[in-house]
Length: 386
Length: 238
Image 1 (cartoon, helix red, strand yellow):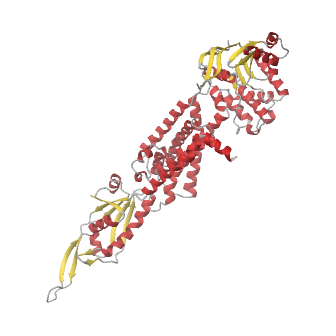
Image 2 (cartoon, chains in turn yellow, red; image 1 turned 45 degrees about the vertical axis):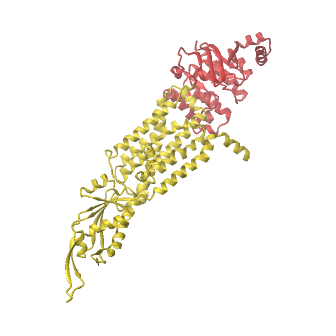
């Protein structure tokens, strides 16, 4: 029995490759990705702090002991920037002012600190440490870090800030005026993960269903019958696309309904646009299934496409690790993966509230993907085989 | 001629499946293609139906070199059952009928007629996956007939069918032939070959001999077609 199984495995070169090569590839990816996970958070600082004067009473060093009263101009904002640069754990970029959203976009920031003109003044006057924080809000983990790190950092740093030997007031309240470019405070983990997972499910299941059912057409001989009929190749491809896309849409409708109304996840943007995106993506997945079914002899080999086609996309499409944080040599891979564009577009709609105009590029890429797959599928699909 | 092939050759790798085959089938003829396994019967039928390209030689189906152009008038039943096992009998026939563009009401009538003829009426709404091999064969035949084709290509249609039903199959084929339908049937069962108007013996991709059943018997001086065929194989080997 065992011998028979070994013999069968050795005969099926592809399974053999899968068993031994794929785990190595997957773990290599894992290794790379887990190492890069600690990529720094980019925080911009617009320091408009004008500084403030503080009266310092120096202990008398003269005789007769007359305390020396000095007025010292200090800029606490500047000190904080320096402190953050040294040990804040962020990549700090000092920037001139401007429209905050634009600054964030142009500098690809995760967050932006704003020290107002009276930043030092407020501290000197004991009113508190007041500053603005704008969170980009695309990545949930970064959002959480930004929401929590600064309060700690500021209250920890204050006692250490000496101004000409005199510590600053320590009982200052930290007041952060937090704003969000995308999403918001109430957006939690699930709000961030559900959009990309909706895309992923549509893709994965549609692809799998198509490749299996196309293989079955061939295995049961119905494909030959279809090809003997007046049905054209294009009709076959379009029929398949339509049938499975309807299913994929029903599925994403259910998932959307469930996530929006049962799990009550937060979202912005248009549901219809979301639907359209899913539909296009499903058509792409159907045609990819048709295409790849020609490279699989049986259902086992079709299932083997999962680690090859699906797994890298999970790792590299920004589903788990943001593409921006990937090492440079992996990025080109990300940009050829359809899931990258689908999840970016769906995320754009759900978290950023984007309209069609703002996800135009992704939209076009998904249409191109569907067309490319359809074209390749129709090229490998041969009515009359030689 | 409904079917005409000239010097038809087909190689699969180094294997010669068809080796210079010349065949002519007239309209309304019930032609039986006989031969052992691997003699090229299925290859020939697949080339005629248009899913396989010949390596060399010419072919004409109803006057066209590309059988696909005549696809709407051809009925094809391949060797495997070729049905959707998760659809019912009725749904399968209806799907293939619709594929050939049969109008809905006409199709409904035709399905009832076929179910009746092939004794499938009581199984019409059962899933094909739950049916026995012989029943599936009948459903498969019904699918090939749903659009009332002018040319019927049947690759071993009677395998796995019980004798009583086989008789009614052949009666039906004869009736269709009288109505002007051209039928090409492959088989390796000699006993049913008697029912054909003309027979062709295929061996190693070549047409060994051709003729009416009576002619072939008298040619070899044998009592049955089976013996005649064995005799032909023996003499051809020399």
